[in-house]
Length: 477
Image (cartoon, rainbow, N blue to C red; front, side, top):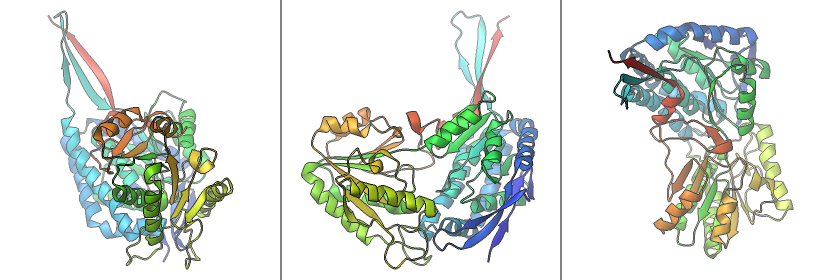
């Protein structure tokens, strides 16, 4: 049955100027229609957020916390429904929907507590003539653009710190996966959240989407998306002075040294790479392996790739779901084919899995002998492909790890030599360096360097993006 979802604007569930179909990429069936915003709807949302800003900023922290925890309670009570939304709109394996859901309910709790730790600060006056305080206040209206790959997790990264800091927020989920975000809008309406504090809408075309950033109403533009999209929104948003917080693309390197635990490295690389069909901003892209262990590591990765379960079956333990659409599938397939034409060796996958004729599935793929001349080396893959690159020179490999234009988000090191690991970590120009493991959570900073973004999602640092600093000085009489 095809469900219809309305936008949530100004405390109400409303229709938009257009409707969009949402297609499950695993079945290629339409699973929902959603109201989509035109320019008039965008204007309505912006005005609703602006009208809510003074009251929400003045709302005591304790009351904001109560609203956040009330929303969290509604989220928990509707876990099955929310996970089913993700399962259907993304074709995401059922097990993978749990992470999305968990981050939403945990984020609401975390930031409801973390905002209590934001306090005024006192500065010492060197001349003894004044008292000085630094106070933190809400930045104002925030507009949040979400990527499609983790529909609720990405929403969680924005809605919770915005609510906690006292900022009304307009959340623009991707038109590819808006259903679960719209379901959260329904929960906001159900609990009676004050009008305009949260607004959720997707857009029909680039014009309405750009209008959100081009407006002079927002004080903050925040994004989870590609580097190109980040550049575009910064340009469009330059109609007024705004803050920007952006988690952008990456081309994550993995450095595997000869003394590494190869089973651990292979398990982490393949799990993170094949989960969510590799459509993860921090997933390993360029896997540099010291030549002495290259063959042994290669065999472990290939075995895991061939054993990985692919498909769309709620009752099965599936690791790899579909690519988001036909265009994404064709793009990654093109990267694979070009790499093979230029000399890479295809060891596993490379095409549609046998027996899956419907849906945008790509078999977990392993390429060996990948070189910098190949686009799959230079580009963020965003697909279930492991690219293996043997190396001999430990100094030269650091330069290669740092040479990607879209680098700067995540990186990985595997070695038993902790002194080496620390030395390499200092050299890597990435916002996150994972050593002999992988860990992401709401309390850990998540952000990039350079072209991979500015600001942070997760942790207490995310609140900095939603707050401004004011100095209050008083002369001593």
